[in-house]
Image (cartoon, rainbow, N blue to C red; front, side, top):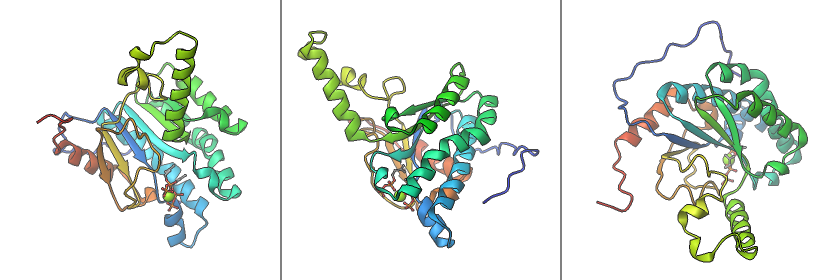
Amino acid sequence: MSIRWPFFKKKKKKTTELTEDIPKHVAIIMDGNGRWAKRRGLPRIAGHKEGMDVVRDIVIAATESGVEILTLYAFSTENWRRPKAEVDFLMKLPKEFMHVYLPEMIENHVKIDTIGEFKGLPDHTRDAINHAKEKTKDNKGLILNFALNYGSRNEIVKAVKEISNHVNTGTLKIENIDEELFSSYLYTKNIGEPDLLIRTSGEVRLSNFLLWQLAYTELWFTNELWPDFNEELFEKAMIDYQARKRRFGGI
Ligand code: IPE
Ligand code: IPE
Ligand code: MG
């Protein structure tokens, strides 16, 4: 595990390569913790712990770059399939993260939020997150949005059920259902769609993450495992993003 020296704040490295066109909303599939640990002969949970510290570094990097929203895939609705001991460890990480880093998040004006099936989480996990949400609710800096017990198909089905219910009760007319209305039934109703999606660990798939919202997002993949991800790679992703031409179907 890396040793940190909070006494010496790292100076922001000035880059000439990044332009003003910073992606407003960046989403990250933080993958490869287990493999990182395995390569070192460590238990998988050691990779999750190391990955937690990288979350802190990337939040700070995002804040300094002027990113407004950072959505991090922390636990999927499919991750319950993992061994109980690993799931239990992952469910304790939000508390651990807040314990170590909440003061620094507050110092940096970060506002903490979540997307996903919140009530499906253990009480202690929810308590830690609710505490962080409450402490940061008036902050005007980066929105740090953890996708926890999040699954995109689950989110879409939930939206369909709610819409159907509103149609049934007469509060919504079928002819008023359009893309904008549908989006307003998703967890992301207040934060919109990512401009840039990063996935680490060499996997080139979405794993049930933001399927609706990523329709026109720029995708960026790296072979680096999440615990090895860092500010330089984050900046590299944004530089590559800036070199792309987003057309949204136009010319
Ligand atoms: C990502 O790392 C963290 C979570 C999914 C919670 P993994 O645990 O998936 O690591 P790999 O993909 O097995 O290496
Ligand atoms: C996606 O990673 C979920 C998170 C990073 C939280 P997984 O490791 O669960 O994805 P798959 O199983 O390789 O598709
Ligand atoms: Mg994985």
